[in-house]
Image (cartoon, rainbow over all chains, first blue to last red; front, side, top):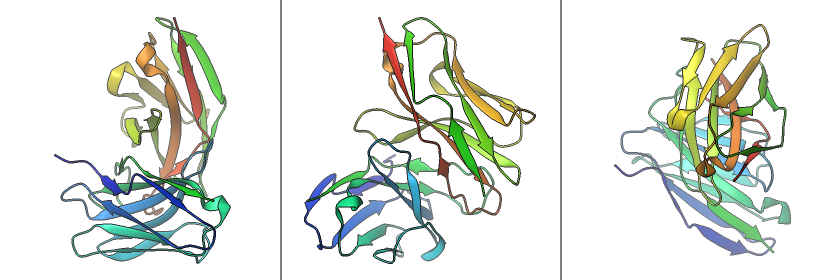
Length: 115
Length: 114
């Protein structure tokens, strides 16, 4: 079975531009979460979606937004890019939401470089 | 709020010797704890998880971890390191009611030398 897939794998943008990152969860998984991993740090939670509704949001500015589609895939959008947005963006999927200890499975990530 | 502290940013061992990666957690509620591994330019892979069942948890590739509530610790161990174990390791916590939001530690870089 295919794991979590993300596209594109790499992306280079300039300051002020907009970017859209895409994620397809494992088949049957209904929850998708997004994390930002800046070089040398642990991943930071951005969003969680379940059944197309936002269920959680981390401490990120409104320039960050996301949505989940009827097929449970998801997009992360970032507007007005800053140099500090350069990071590895990770998508994770799980079957359920709000279940204690539910395992989240991560994709390979999209590496975004903002110049 | 929950948090984890990984006590060592870098650990270096010789191949065939034991591995110990240390993690302390802080949580207002009963936590679920995970260890993930990240190889260079790869995503995160789950090694093992604790969810209030047995306190000694066995994972993949010979790794195990012990949940010690009295010490608020969840250290990761392996009896004998292999070159392929060289990677970044993250201790992670989540709590009931937290919507499965994962809170990561800052990571421990494991180096394995011949």
